[in-house]
Length: 367
Image (cartoon, rainbow, N blue to C red; front, side, top):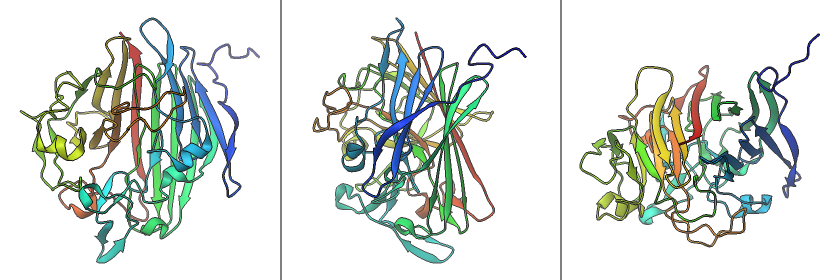
């Protein structure tokens, strides 16, 4: 029998090694996905966190383009969601409360923008802080890892036992794809997203204001002083939030616009212009000096643009360099914030017998 001669014919299982142990005795491991172009993605089963993502620039030089830490302790105690899957509900829920089928639920309140408490990214101990089960996988032309977690009924105030899996794939075309699935035994809101902070120059190399950004959305959801959507869906036309044509991220971020002042910069949900086909092209980011390009595609109706507005240099990353103001860019594909309290928004309620399926791709190349 002739043996396969390439990764495309029969990919090897990803590498797997020890990363650390939690105070509760849970072992955290690193899974390493690679392709023949030199792209390497390393992820741990704490929070399905992406530790590093190395991609080539236009000269072929590799650099790690996501912010993060070297130690488990830093992820447990200091991380502003670097590289994590957040949930059970990513983004904010007003006052940490919602009514579902006539029952009011009170969630953990862990964020107070503008002095207004809310539930953020799943609560005090959201999915980013728990240890998932991890399993290396392979398919023709790709390596993968599946992370699985069961969230107990009542965890952080949410109803229902929720069974979640998140699968990362890295293929030979340098596409990092994320497949989400979830089931629940009670009706519950679910909104899962990946919270990687990207810097296409390389982590710790300064701010991202020189990145050129396109977002394929003509509308967004404006927010109040608590960073909660008002319920309005507003056109981006004539505002600094218009990225329908490529614009440098720093060109208008300091504009005297009420929405930017509320968020200390960009921290807003975009209503994506969905096209025919299974995936919508949500955004393209281009770093002109080194030539790296990242394209975002998703099945989700929205995407949060966040620009590291609260990084202040107090966190040191993997390279030993500090992460300063606006040192990373997040493009979080999602349902809209506060959807459980906004009946006009697309529903995030998962009911028994249903299966949540969502997919996002980050595609990398250079020019």
